[in-house]
Length: 293
Image 1: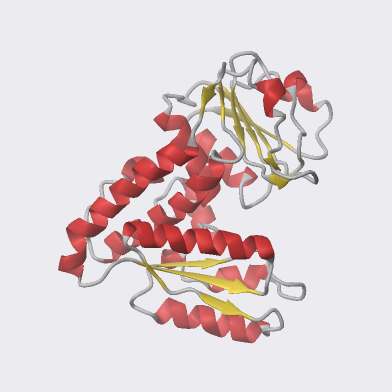
Image 2 (image 1 turned 180 degrees about the vertical axis):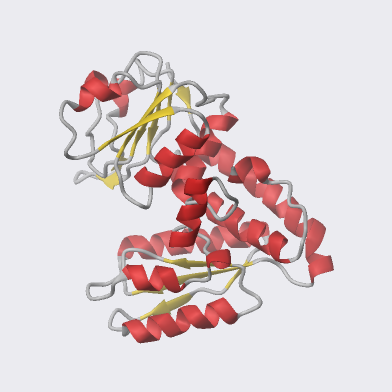
């Protein structure tokens, strides 16, 4: 039976740490950390994600300054909202919820976010900092994966790691973080020939392909740690990931569940980035370095 990489349990533990940091320093700073989530349009999944983030903020004492703009909002108006949040001294983290409605290009809007307030770690400057090993906000999902591995005693150093997926949101920063942790990293994707030949070499397999049930027993080496980043709604109801969990669980040494694995940690790392930015703005030692390496 594979070790369960439980993101819910870890997220709760990290939230306790964040709450303690906020309680210790809020009176001295004079305000709590602030996170602004900007949502454009009425994508149902985005509405759920934003609600979950706002609830998480409330649990640990982060102030929410979110805004919901209509789907027909012009790019200039969205840009204006971002600039207002950049200038708002109460806001330490800004997240532009993706996907955006058709007709809105995410790239210039993400680039308009103050890099020091980039709660999702997607600004070009922060991705460059990750590449160079410099401090800065880290992409939330891959940072959450790294925290899950560390908390379960899975050290990537010297191991072979395979990442399936090359998106800028998960796959690319995931590969960089594993490489920074001294793993030997292969990035596979939709054009990869003979995927199993690569994945069967992996001690650590991170699946972020966005295709339900893509990875089964034939792709997994015995004793590997498998992290399933995908989450999909089944036509018959319920959720599933990119990994066929029932096939992989008897083979793997560790497996993250869907739901309850990477998802909770993605939200929690958004809070980590916000609290760390709040501390840095005020010259405070946050004690969270193990979560942002």
